[in-house]
View 1 (cartoon, rainbow, N blue to C red):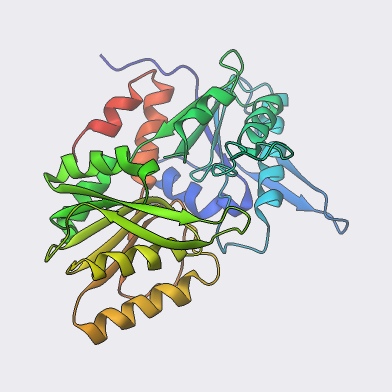
View 2: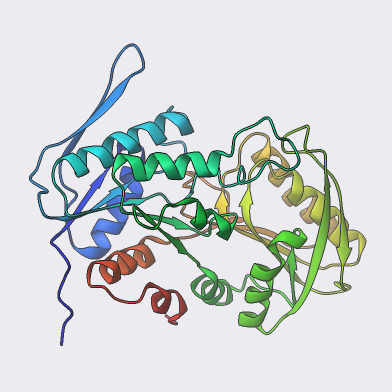
Length: 336
């Protein structure tokens, strides 16, 4: 028996999220409903829905980071709020915001400094106040962010890619005998990758100066990588300073080829310069370096050592499961 949909599906998007939204819509065989995003000369914006969504199960897409346009993370987030509120005020039955990369996820606690805000919680409150019943994101930096949503108003759907990504890595030959976590905070996620791959596990201990953003002084390895091909897994690669420090430590401990795989390849400056230098180093020293990122953050014209794991089909399946009241967890655990 086919499950009964909770309401007719309507897919809509903000302009910065259109490429990703179209990919998901194509997998579902559904159109994106027409919307009109407007930015005024003073910097204000608005979004209008040019279709009837009353009583619909509405999914609103937005990409928070990428080179689709010149909009900032904050521009994109505010436009997402406009879109969510527009759907709610249009009498949608359910409104789900789909943001593959959750903004502010690394600002989930104060780290000993009391005179600053907690952005992850602020964004959660704003989304539910705008009218979102559910927020879907991919591998949020800290699972505890789910507790920043009021369960009577909104629910966080945190999608994990472990099984699907590891199967893809195996198919592409981008694996190693040891899975390495870049820090102790990501150790449990790295353990899940190691279990899927039947590989050994090691971890790096990062030393940071939190008074300076994106600064890693050095990484220290806990474990053994001598003569082993290594898969270094992480959730976010931003400026790639951690990647450089990790590769330096792994090579000093005798690692062979290295694959860096991350869920959110933000790759802010000077990340591309640093990764390109790592590739040049690997060529000159006679070992292989490859980088894997998912399509939560899209990059064009990438070099041959950069590999993209596309998540559009998985997200499409999850949307269908939510609409039919199915198990999202099962989708994440199913093998291809």
